[in-house]
Length: 95
Image 1 (cartoon, rainbow, N blue to C red):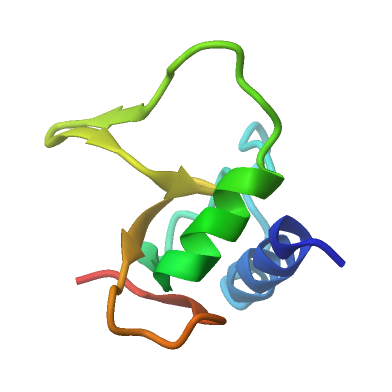
Image 2 (image 1 turned 45 degrees about the vertical axis):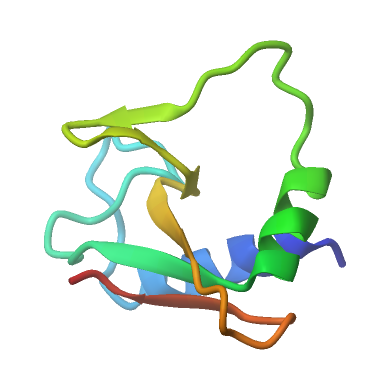
């Protein structure tokens, strides 16, 4: 199972806790209206593994937000914890 498959399973497991999406929201990226924001915590090694597993885009297209370019995985912000163990991949409630 690839690292992207593992992340997808983690994302879907959290998403299911908040019930089905209303019609018109695209799974797995659309989220139920009552679902709070989450974010990913990854180690540097996991960030490298995610980067290598991602299909090539052909051009730079970072996700934009009010704060500028952001790294995202399944719609959630991706934060690198430089002190985390190499296998770290967590989905946590946003702050």
